[in-house]
Image (cartoon, one colour):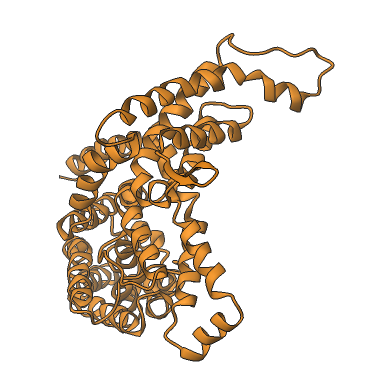
Length: 428
């Protein structure tokens, strides 16, 4: 049985490793992750300008800070724009570019080329503008497709003889700027063609086409309660098999959950209620705020204070501090949780139960959906109150931590009883 488990785990690890290290997948993941400071920063500003404290709101209005801060939040919703640069830069770096920034620039420019403009008729002629919606939530899938294609094509062309060679006397930074101009121009050709062709269709552009045909249905399916529960189960199972489940499912979470989160941020900044209950941040809340994947807060407490065997008592004390700060590797590999059938049931099902309870709590308006999470390296009960879901959300996280202690207790006692018996036999 052990040999079968090891063989199965090895095969899963190979498949997951190939997926995680794939050029396209890893570039999208890292490129999107590079936008997290903007995403978190705008969410924090959004919370500050919407605090239900009348003197504070009056202060922002009287000092003239309310308008520029609100505008900054709206600007930060141009996630597709930031993602395009991030993906282009990462993919160029992975493909051996001398200057990966060039890849970021070509990807960003290509994304703008396929983005439709709005024509504004004025007294002195026509003016053109880019709608924030096409640069933000509605343009995320387009941004990923265009950035990957532009980045790969540009790097392929940069390795051909299609380069401008400058005399040796020209400074390197100048010659490098001219070297890839042919590749830069040729890379733009297919995206110009896309702009022209889709401009002739009822969609009016490539971005509205992708949003209608791919992004909207995909986001609807992926951001359903069922879709998120599947992701949580997959995350826990991968960790149980010894893989970094959070990192493996992160690309899917980012792709499906970023657009709804941006829509929520934009809506709250405009004084409206958040339209989406489930976003990237809601699933991250359960993964991070109740002790890490598997909602392990209770396991850390139960091991540290309610075990009698020397092994688990010692392990509990050693793993309590990192565990409370959401660092789970010591317990996953040191307890271990990996291939531990005693802990499989609570490890997989507790996040599912917690997420369902959170969903109905938001549905019943007991607390609001979180927009930001501050940092993951804060104990869950404290982090819940620092998140943007309000005091009610903080109380919910505390209750989930208590539930974790209750659920893990009988399983910890089973392991502890078995270990006590082994230790007793060894002494005799």
